[in-house]
Image 1: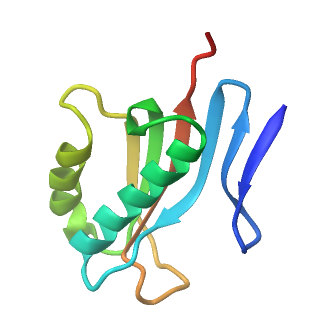
Image 2 (image 1 turned 30 degrees about the vertical axis):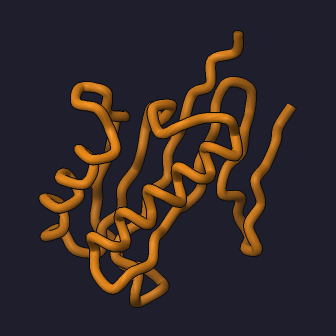
Length: 115
C-alpha cells in the first residue's frame, strides 16, 4: 500500500511505501539561513510525525544550499537536531532556486521498521 501526504503543489511532501518514507522537498522560511534551516527541520519533523516517525528515522538526506558559505552553519544546526554518530547519510550541494528568498531545501528517505 502507498500513502501520500499531499501538498497544494504538483508533489507530495512524503510518500510512504512499505517500510520507507520518501520525502519531497522541504524548505523553511525566515529572514536568514539560520531561521530557514530551523524552520525546514521543524517542517520535516512535522511531516515525519504524520507518518508516525521522528527525525531519528531519517536514513538519507539531500541538502541543497543556495550559498556554500552556509555549510558551517548547516553543520552546527544538524548537531542540534541529531545525536552525535546518529546522523543520516547526507549529500550537500549548491543550486539556484525558483523562489529568490529560498536559501536551502532538504529531501530524503526515512525507514520505518514494521513490527
